[in-house]
Image (tube, rainbow, N blue to C red; front, side):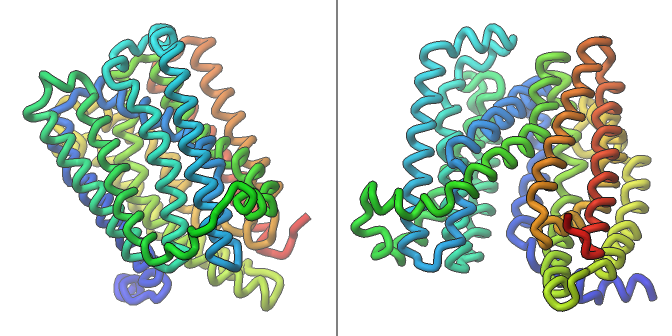
Length: 426
């Protein structure tokens, strides 16, 4: 009876329908992992994780989060000018990154102990540009409701990029040493996604005519405060996600980072796809309730109980089976990553249960809380990593410290979100 209700739940069907393209793309990414882990070592995956972390941090400054403003103007012409501004910013910032690498790239690599980067370090500006400009085009296509094109780009990019990494791992190791095959596949993935999204622009060519510096500035100025706030907030959020990766590389080396990053990749991505979809449905229903009644605590508790009822059993089972699952899927060499995954699943369980209801602050307009909570979480991560450095603890204790910090942050967040759902805003 309970299973039947779950399967036929309108709530669940709505949530799953929002994540089709992303689900297919992630399915492809996970399907090729057993092949990639037999072609590339944990150390090479660690170097690749560090590359992606640096790219993610820099890309925020490349786009200046202007993509968030593309959805806001009434006219497509103003949105097109913002998109052009984003492209210009991405190009300029990527060139600055390239110049910085030319001037002091070797020094940075030597200081960080990552001299294996030198053969493909110059691809970093390309990745920064691709990530920044892709976000702009993605939001443009979403503005035009071209959701199928967005999904097509994501799926095509993952499929082709993965195949490139596999082919290099099988036949091109002599020419592409170390993690270069993974990095080149990642760059190809970004390029394919960009090219697919560009195809939809031709239908709106009139919107991009007669664009000048003055018209661009005029279109961007109304959103300068929003952009500044988003850059700070998103950079903090990106820091929370990628700071542990950068720190683990420096403290424990890229081999340990490879095990850790693979554990994060496998134990968080699939469940967060479902959790974010549930959150999208919650946000829509909670927003309606807020407008009609000035509160949405009934929807808050129903959603929280729903995510707990499916999340807690799922994660408890995962904690038991994940080490052997890693060995079966990825190979014996990755058992250590499975052990890390057991610990990460503890935080993952709290994240899965609470993330769907963390949209309340947005609904009631408590933007200051969102910024403060991200700062609070980032400071907790910095404190945890400081303890790791000062007391020279091993990687297992380091992961536990990060997990405890995350669990505490999620509990604080859900407490405030409940207050917002009850109508408390100040």
